[in-house]
Amino acid sequence: MTDEIVRTSEEHPVVPVKDDKEIQQALALIGDVVENSSHLKLNWLLKTGWVAVPVESGGHFQEREAEWFSIATLSLGCNECFAIATEPLINTPLCYMVKTSQEGFMAIDRACAGMNYILIAKNRAFAVLLTTEDYFIVAGPSNFVVKAIGSSISTARRMFLNFSNDSLWPAYIRERLLKVAERYQSYNGR
Image (cartoon, rainbow, N blue to C red; front, side, top):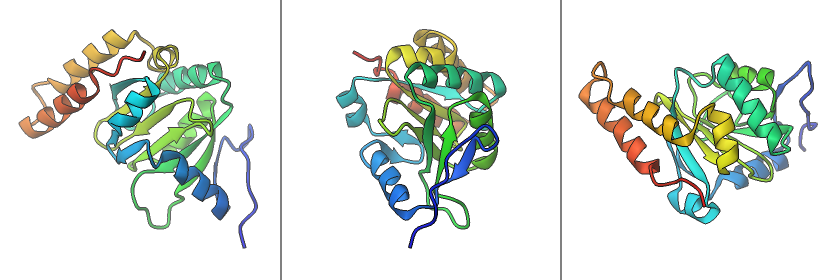
């Protein structure tokens, strides 16, 4: 027996998905998208021809970023998206339905703080990998990515390189972040 399917609303911009069938459908959406909790699959990015940009993260979303993401997702006609865990979790929902509003993105930020999730539309029009590794990865058509990151793609890449090269980072973190920048550098869309 499955639980009732719950939908987002103005009062509830984020709701856990409880229906087993819907959870399985959501998990199937990311099988060929997510490599692990920190990376998207490169062959999937090649196949889609999308832009993929790492962005500094001090958690997941700040208010301004949540607003940009709302504008970007709505420009694709997406009013809701899934937030799906990319790591095993205990006593925490594996999947949420998120209203693609600033409030929805801020609410999922609170619900998923300190955990790895991916935001993805049912039609896979975009993907945003939220990591606990000091960055998130925004992937989609170039017009979506520009709106979602609030800058040009080249500026966002330069900002992430500056963030990665910060001398305050211990060498091992700086090296990890620079590898992330390098990994996604050539994914500039078709």
